[in-house]
Length: 404
Image (tube, rainbow, N blue to C red):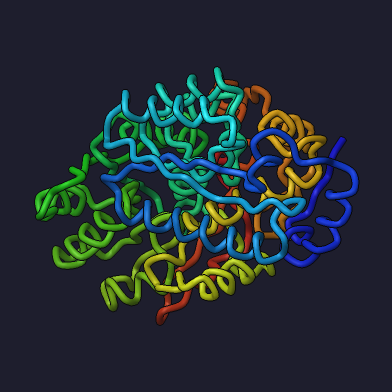
């Protein structure tokens, strides 16, 4: 049984380094080069998410390496663009898998889990904190989540709408890719089913459309109390403006992985007044404040970068460093063993509960047991008010919990 704490990385790095150096040698490529490499697969067609992920990883690495790295070894990051192609995504994963210096993939952002995850599994390469979008992400043994994926970033908007804001109906706008369309089944068959309702409408949003007025018109005409925008930052900004211009008065739900209160203020201004942020993390927690501090210290404190997406990439990098410090060897095999044995990685309130990776088992209440990686399906609802994210109730909502 292993239990860890994020503050073991954030505030106790020197002590844990001293212990780690004394008890667990650096091995393999890390021993020879005094570096440990993490990889990250990114979807270049979503530039805002790529920028957020890179910024979060960079901020974490600057902090970790300034404190001595892992047993004296510096951690470095390598990135691979999937180029919006399943085969290219698979090659990214395979290339990382074939590189002995790469101990983990961190903060992956790709729509091609169907090809990426099997390659990671074959290489026994852990994927820590990926964007979990499709069913393969929710069940792959390579995945070690740092949030609930699209469940907490998107699907939890259902109970936040119906329980917290007392809405009666929900529509969704989703990115027009195969993984994006899966949100319809998730919402209708699992999230909204306990409420005895289904989506009012679902509208695909092209990744490259210059004008979303027709999509906004369809959503407005169906007039659901809540519209969930399951799209990246560029499309969320554009769609929200179009909805407001067409007179929509209901609540607009945007994942905290996509926008923060600061980025809403800078990109939308008054048009954000009816936005509700669906947050995977508690913004008032000490670790989240530490994340913001380290982002600013690394030069990544811009409003558009301070989101749950970059926070997840930051947290995932911290998890890898912390688990490596405990591992019997500072290589891929040692890290994988440490992750698989972790029963309580404590984020000190940043998440709803500690991360227990031994709990990645089929749960009949979650996708009929087909999504063992959804171990924390909880999110917080934040109302946007005067440039701030204000908790609606301060209670974590279970995406599958039904009526409160």
